[in-house]
Length: 168
Image (cartoon, rainbow, N blue to C red):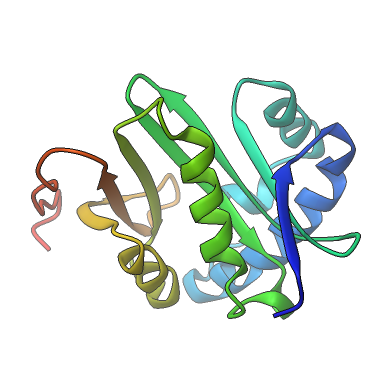
C-alpha cells in the first residue's frame, strides 16, 4: 500500500469527501438496488455542516489525493461511527481499517462503546468490523427498507449480547 496519512478533515475537504463517499457507496447501491442510500443523497452543504460541527471527521490521503474518510459523533459514552468511505480503487488495501482505528483513537478516553451499522448483506464490511472487535447486536431496516446490521464494540465490561429485532 502506498503511504496513506490520516488527519482531521477541514472545510476545504468537503467536496473531495462527498466525491469519494458517493463513489464508495455506489457498490452498496448496486448490491441493494437502491440509489437513495443516505450517503448518496447527502448534499455538499450537509458534509460542510458535519465538518463544522462537533463530529470527529478524518480524511485519509495518499499524497495530495483524498482516498477515504470517516466520521464519529460522540453521544454520552458512545461514539457513533459513520460514513466510512474509501475510494473504489483503494479498497482492499487497508485504508478502511486504518480509518476505523484512527477514529477510535480520536474518540479514546471519551467513550466506552463504539456503534455503527452497515448493510446486512455487505460481507466485506462485516468482515472488516468483526476483525476489529465489533459484534452484530441487532438488525433493523433503514428508511428505504434495506436490512442493516447494527454493530457495537465495547472498551470495558462484557461484550453486548447478540439480539435481533427481526428474529434473525
